Length: 590
Image 1 (tube, rainbow, N blue to C red):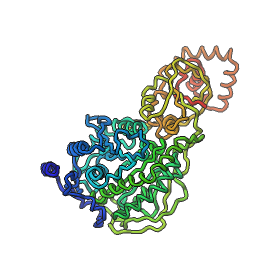
Image 2 (cartoon, rainbow, N blue to C red; image 1 turned 90 degrees about the vertical axis):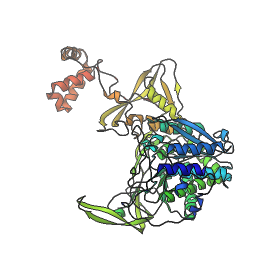
Image 3 (cartoon, rainbow, N blue to C red; image 1 turned 30 degrees about the horizontal axis):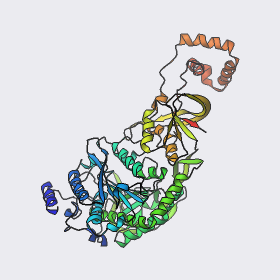
Image 4 (cartoon, helix red, strand yellow; image 1 turned 180 degrees about the vertical axis):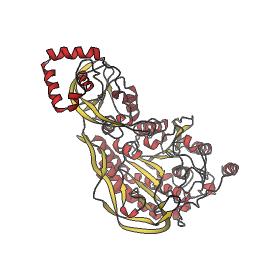
C-alpha cells in the first residue's frame, strides 16, 4: 500500500503551497502529532505528504475501498451520483454494520467536503478509520456506530488547483467551494435542489443518526483558535433538549480533549466590524438552509465545525481527528442520554414556532483569544485595511450579540393542505422524511387562506433561485380540495420542519425560495367595452357593491380621478377576476 501511494504522489508532482501573502502564523507543536503514522502499512495518502496535501477523488476512493475490503466492521454504500456522474459514498463503521439504524446504538454521522476546498474532515476521517480497523482504537465502536461521508461535493473536489482558497493554509491542492452546477450546497438543506444534499438526507432518513458533524474551514478574521465549532444554542433552538446536551455535555468534553492534545478550541462567532474587532462579535442562529439550522429544526443535534483557515493543514486535520475520536468516546458514555434528549424534542408539540431570530440589543461578554492587528493605509485601496500581526491578544470582555430574539413567530396549524399540482413540493417533503396523507376523492373543508401583498422579488439569483418575500393577510373560506391533495400534519416528529418549509413567512420556506411564483401572475384580463356595461348593470342591482365603492372613493383620491383604477376596483370584485391571484396555494388547517 505505501509503495503504491508514494508512486502516485510522485507522479502528481505536487506544487508547494505558497502562503507568503497570508498573515504570520505561530509555530505549532501538539501531542496530537503522534497520530501521524507514516510507517504504518495502511498509511493514508495525506500522511505521506506530512499532512500538507490531500489526495484526489480517485486516490481517495482507491484507498477507501481497499480499507473497507480489509475490515469486516466496515461497509461502503453509494448514496447517489453527482451531476457529473461520480459516486457519493458513505462508509459505515460498526461491530454490526448491517444493523446501523436498527440496533438502538448511538450513531454519529460525520460529513466532510460539502465545500471541497475545506477537506480537513476527509483526511482526519481516513486516519481514524485506519486506526479503528488496523490500529488500537477498535474500542471506539463499542456500542457506537459511525457513518462517514468523506467527500460530499465530489465534482467540486475534482475542480482542483493550488489557487482555489486564497485565504487558507493548505492543503497544497484544494477543491472548489461550489458544485458543478455552481451551487453552494451548504445553502441547500431546505430546498434540496442538489443531488449532493439529497444524498445526505437519504442517509439521515435511513439511519436516523443521533449526532451530526459537518466539517468546514472558516473565512474571515484571524484569532488564536484552530478548531471552532457551534450549534444553535439552547436560548434560540427549536430542539432545546438536544441543544442543552450539546452545550452542557458535548462542548466541555470536546474542549477538554482538544486542549489536552495541544489545540485551542473556540466558539463559532464572527466579527461585527472588519476594521474594529473591539466592537464585538455576532453569534448566529442558523436557519434551515444550513446544516446546523436544518438539524435544529428536524431535531437532529448538529455541530458545524469551522477549522481556522489560517492555521496549517496538519494542525487542522489533527484537531479534527481529536474531535472525532472524543465524540465517539463521549457517545459511549452519554449516547443514551442524547437519544433521550432527541426523543423529547421529537415528542414536543409547541403551539408557537419561531421562524427566525434577530440579534439581541444587549450583548453577552466573553473572553476571546484574538490576534493583534493594525490598520494600514493602502494606496491601492485608497483607504485603511486590517493587517494581522500574528501576535496573540486577549480580549477580557468582548461583546457578543447573539441572534436570540424572535423576529418572526407563528401559531402552529394542525396541518397544511397542498393541492396535487404541486408535485415538486410534495416530492421534496417526502425526501425530507415528512409524513403526509393523500385524499382519494375531492372534499370541501373550511381552511385558512393566506393572501400575499407587497411582494418583493430578489433582483438577482441566489443559489440558482430568485427568492421572494411578502406580507400576508388571512382569510377563512370553504375550499374544494381535488383528489390527490396532500395533508401534512404538524403532529409528527418532523412537524417543526414542515412549518419551516410550508409557512411562507419562514426565511427558508419553499415560498421564500421561489417555488410558488405562479401565484403572482395573471393570465386573464378585461376589455373595457365588456367591463363598463357589466359595472353599469351591477350598480343598478347590487346596492352593497354601490355602497362599498362610494366608501372606497371617499378614502382613496386615486379612485376619484383615475378611470383605470376605478375599472380595476370593480374588476377585482367581479366573478371574472382570477380568484387564485396572490393566494398562497398551501392552505392551513386550524
